[in-house]
Length: 415
Image (tube, rainbow, N blue to C red; front, side):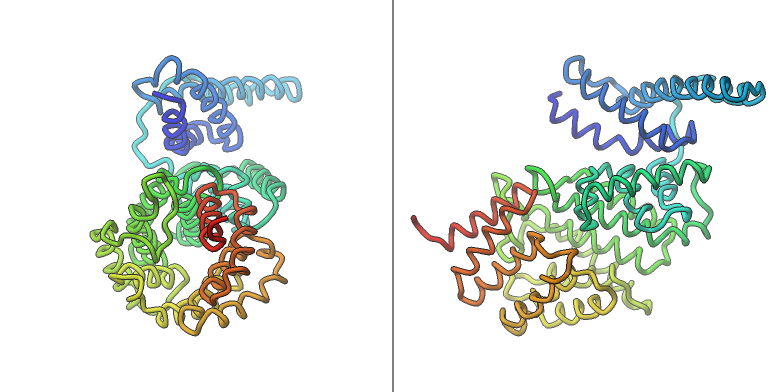
């Protein structure tokens, strides 16, 4: 197995390994460090020696040894500080058999998800920590999702780990009441993991299918636990309806294909049918939330046989509802695109102008990319060209950068 395949495998199973180690030892911060060391060892050894028959068990075994070292170090420190024999006895019992690997009956990743979304943390900290532990996202990717500097996000994650450690949170599935209290953060985490998987913000690949698939799996599992929650059902529908378009999003060389140019015969009709049925049932329950609105928008796109058949007035109305629920500048940006499709590009451009004064998005590549698109629609290729090129210099996604460069090149014409 090559290094690329090894990296993919490690990324896929890392959250499961972390969940198992946290379950056994109870120390989240130390367990994460131990798992990271085990992953480094695997990345170094497996390409040369081959992947073991039970890679998950191998990683748990190695991480367990690191945890044993950690506990022994803690024992030595406590011996020097307190010399309390009873404490030593209790801690020695924890170290008893760290190398034994037992099958885990419960879904450790799901438990880890709820653990990281503990009420002891603020929503922002819980979401950031879970994206790191469960989603396997880098600090830079998480910072990008939150529109904050990477250093700020690193501090937030570090504080969240310390809070979890001090709170003494037990590793087990919370009660139904506790699940409800943590659900908002859980949904936001799954949403962001899916988005990063569907449209990776960093690197040479447009998508990370391992992330988006795991987000869908976990969302389905949470929905099984809480089948009556309308927003949760809306999130599952949104993921399924969006993922249905994945086969048509890239060309033969991995290049990005925008929605209006995709071959819709490649879309997953079975997934679309499932998603439309789910959101249709959910919308009839009463109060409508942001995930349900996004799922409804995705359903309208998916049900249009051709891009020209898209019901943009209905999409504009749904974005308008969502915009009234939040001041997220990305929602305003999407609303502007829909307004341009209904009322003309000038209307969309007017809605975008105030975003230049919003520190969360000013200078973001999507602002330039949307401006480029709208100026192109308005018949102003020279201005569109400027914005496409500006967006290409700002994005950290190579497929998006290449798409924007090619878009600009088409407007520039032969040189």
